[in-house]
Length: 380
Image (cartoon, rainbow, N blue to C red; front, top):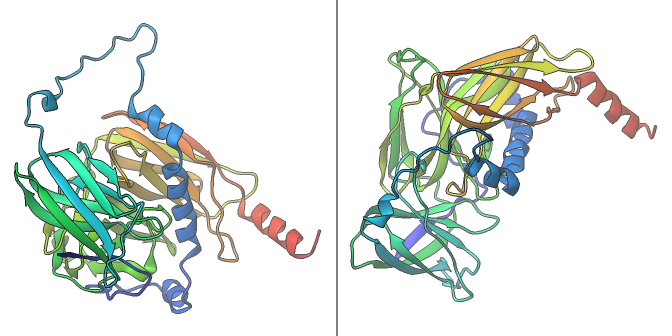
């Protein structure tokens, strides 16, 4: 029987904690997440909820006069059809069936890129069936609405198939998983004394980036190496936590599927050759430093954002280098004088390999947001 450690809303101790600014310490001590967290989380939810965008970006039709690219032969036409995975999802303890649970098959590791995810939804009896699952090391991603995505496995799938009984239990604060690697700059040099963060990814997208209750942190050594140990199985985002003038962002982050006892070696580094230039447009004065967030647009094969970048606009301008080709959504998140947040209109942009792209973001000025809040409080 496979007992699943289902993350809940409780604090887990980080592997090691990097020094925080006084402002961050005060925020965490109060039990509140930074305002920027909710802005960025809402940004992720907006992208995840845009079904039309997912469909549009999954395949871009050729424009008039543009030759349709040659399509590679589908390897599945000649490859073995895979095996059958059956099973049942139940609540731990009571063994009550978990109806309406989405179960996906995937490969364990750091990426969902290029994977074709098999998918099934459990019936009233909690049972599911996945046909044609690729042979080899396999994990099952278990998504029950209102809970974090859980992981069953990894297990070795053979041609005979398998039967899985998956128990959804309360969150484990500790496990035997490990993620290690290096933080590198665009030239491949290690970045020392920087903060690496690991946070739980959620099926509903509302806790994608800054979930302080379920975040592990550590600091890179002199060669840029980091090591996070004692991790429970789950689906996470791993990234570099940067700070400029007390404004924080997460950069070079990517999706990580961690099975029970899994050890993943992951280097965080810019992997593309494109550059994104941007300008903030606002009526009125903006803060000198504004957080910029770039999320890779979702595809039908990806249940969660697979990767993203973060940076800063200084005096209204920003530049991010080393970006991989793809479709992205870009947003700016200025912090208001009272500590609350504002956000820009979301801009969607295609970034081509080894190219330079430009984007302009319309941002309400912080004083305008404050004036509207003051007027509402005063009944004007």
